[in-house]
Length: 318
Image (cartoon, rainbow, N blue to C red; front, side, top):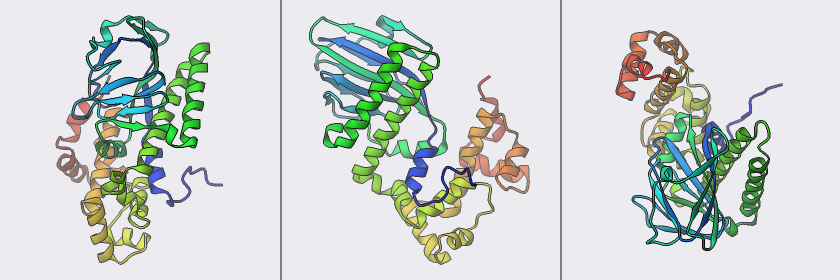
């Protein structure tokens, strides 16, 4: 019996979400009283999320109109930007690092701050994505993305249920609780992305639109699943199936680049991750991605990534 979690490519968009490999990095339960404000610093490569569980506040991020967030509303700041939260537009916003926080674990803390007025509670956190697909998806998101669960009974239920589980874990701090909390944070973010994919016209254009095309989306999924296979335009077209010329034209129209250019770039992004995180060698990666020589792989890598494989491997964290 197959253990493949994606036994078919009938849902390329869902498969893309599965591939994002979300990793929660930080979780904070915030208990504010008005007036209050704080500034969160830039956090390159991470996505911030904020959920209002009581009251309301303003969210401000560069390049976006300030947003008034109400109870049960979920907001994402997806581009790692510094941003501000405050009870009213003129409230002071000291750095979060200047505020006293109760550290309950390596990645979990409680923040209490404010002037003693009306209570505002939030759940905040930061997550990162470990898969090359994430960069393409996140690049399409607005500076601030908000999800109002009240517009859908189903969304409201999953938000409340997830937050309740997070609260239970936070209150008990049982063994493994931090891991559960960060995983539930991951669920919140993926659910928010799914809500955006379902409702925003921007999600039906460009690369995301291509994923939702029944033929081109299937081809992209096949490349994602088997990046080392000896793909050609003809073999991809045959898998869909379409004629070679029709497939090539449609792929370029929807994705914005030719099919083999996409295949090469996808392989090189995977290779860069393997160099940094696995310490893989050039020889291993050349074999993994179907190159006949290390030199051919290295040339393709430098053309796509902009640096030779050795330079990327040297930046691997110790």
